[in-house]
Image (cartoon, rainbow, N blue to C red; front, side):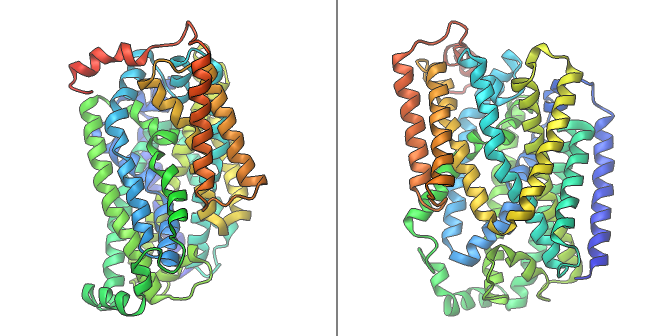
Length: 489
């Protein structure tokens, strides 16, 4: 695959994204709500494709494909556990939306701070999100670097590839905030699905068709169709990865914040349907892609390079390969700009002056954060590109500390600010200590299991011996009439 065609594709992609971003900018009103939430006016299709593009990122065709190549069908089981976690949106989506509308919340951390009556809760959730979303941002940057450098034989180097992703993500986020991000996400999601479906079709045809593909897997790679397969997907490893990823829709603020941005409950239902449909299709694509790479480009040392190796294997027409490169690039950028924008809103609303600050100041603070986050992710990706699986798993294991507080916010009135603060500090420090100092692998269920146990135990125990603050909101009681009126229980 020539460097010239890749550069031309990137240029066309960048120009198309710039046109969409500038069109989005013309509708901006200049308020913080508009910049961070698109004025709470996203329709179901745009919101769904944006959510899907943000969620089903470069992780799928870089990390999940690599996990399939390395360990076999267990990767499908792991991803389906995550997919089943999307059902949490049915329960929590309407509650997030109603709370944000009633009290004007812009960030999930701001919502938790108000629910428990302590702004320190919002501040701590924001800090934890900053710490643990950085590894996930690094995963996306590393995915871009491995992809572009791999398909061009290092003609476009790792550093240059990462810089391309950073520039595009920064530009589209700064121009018009969430509306720009959501509109470009929707287009990127379409490119991802079309390009990946075409590519999978060609690689399966290169193997001899669906029957030959299945026969080849059974005869030569039968171990990859079993669990634990070649050895990766032992029960402990499966639990270590699946447990925190099940709670992804709640623990990751860049996706839960999307629940604040939809126009109405009907739009939210359509959003969830789009996400579920997209997710199922793309999961199957990523796993088939991984098996195809195993057949056509066997014995790779670095499994994260399976996708670049397959793209240059000759099994796919050059124009399809270029289109898929753009699709994966767009997926990574979608996740990057969503993470950066959410973290920017948290800094502006929760670590800055919050609601007391002027809209212009909040937007400026958010933009500075966007640039800082993406530059840091770029630097880390350049030095840690070969461990993308570990970085993604570490992020999921760390962010899960927010889950007990989120569930308690809507379903346990007895939860207190002291309980939340204790659980966040205890769980966060436990995750950092185990992963960075105790040497516990992210593929060991001891890490997420201990973090969830410590976090939940502290939340419940400290809440039972402390009192709720007078300023705390009663989500369970105050939202119940509206939920019942809408037929939501």
